[in-house]
Image (cartoon, rainbow, N blue to C red; front, side):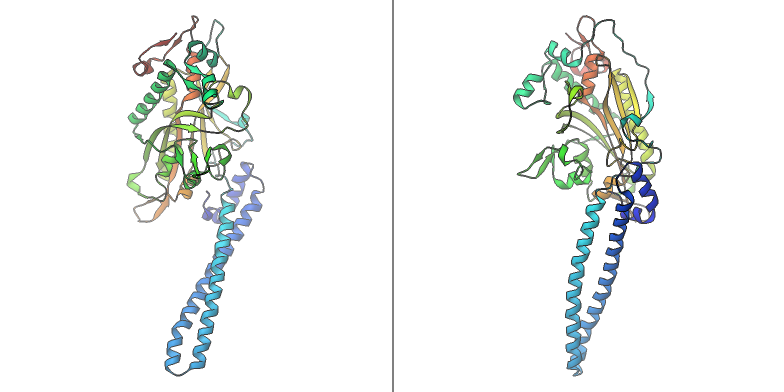
Length: 425
């Protein structure tokens, strides 16, 4: 959530930033917010003045009664009662204005960092870098869904039987490869200084609001209505919310966490080749990295995090490209996002496997996540997170890119100590 102080002091920049994100009626809504904010402050000033007058009138009653000025004392009582009623009305007016301001403020997306290219869609994203790994076949390569069926390592049919489409069942070496990837990702994160967290897989509304999933993405989340809790779409939500309503010490920054969880997304509106096999699932596994950073260092941290993800992909031997998302493709809560895509050779397309984002103060303002500096004043921290990595499309690329002419699939060397085998088939 944008800070109201930013709207007051940097109004034109905020409007320009919202317009760059193609947010409709940006100027009108910002002006409406500022009017509500001014009305709130005026009401608070009037209310404080009336409270002072009421206190003065109340204090004078006893003295007037002692000196026999009964008529004046009764007038002071009437004035005090009238002011009390007026203050009660004003308190309700302040509450109503604050609610209206809040409801409007939470509809505003984050403002993009100046380095983010202006654009409307994924077609306007900028390619920042690629690695030099190439994959080419001199035989008819199979897509991962056919390879998985051929080797009986993933069953789509059993997933449909148990739950529905988008919930595959991993079998035998498929399950072991999945577990190997999770363990390797967690071990690499630990080596990089991230402390592991194993959070709940369901969260309450406050947690969903804190990281920006609510009220923006409730249609994409599975909702347990009887208990009013949500299945997590990513470990980012519970891990970041560990610090909701927390004041940290400046010397504690940065805080670095990683966590493995299953993730649950309804993915409404997905269709066609995008949902084939492992390309898009309703339940999938992911290792997430989360950082809470000093504002002065968060963009340096963002670059370190994306380089860390690229290092994982290099070790897995996967062709990748790094994208800087444009204003129109950046998520609601993010100020700047890099996407990592791996090349799926058998499908002949790029598959997103990681997003690494700096949210600046947007999440922390919702979370009331602050740190206390040397001057003893509190400031809002910056939050960042990234996928390191999401497993389905990594698995898809590994199966496709490492298939051999004889139909077998070679396991990357870094994973063999975890799988216990060096090939499938």
